[in-house]
Amino acid sequence: MLLTRASEYALLSLDKIRQSDTPIGAEHLAAELCIPKSFLAKILQSLAKEKIVISHRGAHGGFALERDLESISVYDVILAAEGKAAAVFDCTQYSDTCPNGDIGGCAISPFLTRFQMRIDLFLRELTLDQIFKS
Image (cartoon, rainbow, N blue to C red; front, top):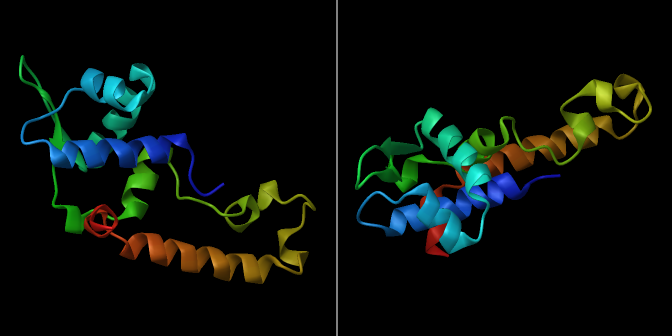
């Protein structure tokens, strides 16, 4: 699966954060986006760990972008939200998940690997600035 809810919620949250002139709290984001607060808090912590957002403490605290939208790729966001790169097919990333148990002998493995490489390149080149302009 290419994108899970974690990636979707990360992107939706980043869209709201970028639109705000002041840091925006996780509770406010969760309510506005109808996302469970505990799940969103984990995603935001992961985004902060990867220096995509910065967390501000205090009465007027919350999350703000740490970097410019042009410097944040969709690949970065997915990696932070998921804890791993997005895989179109499990077997292109992990040989132990091959349904046949023999990725080296798989007739379509080279194609799947090339396909995955193109997806990765696309996601690395696609920035938040580009997707939020559409």
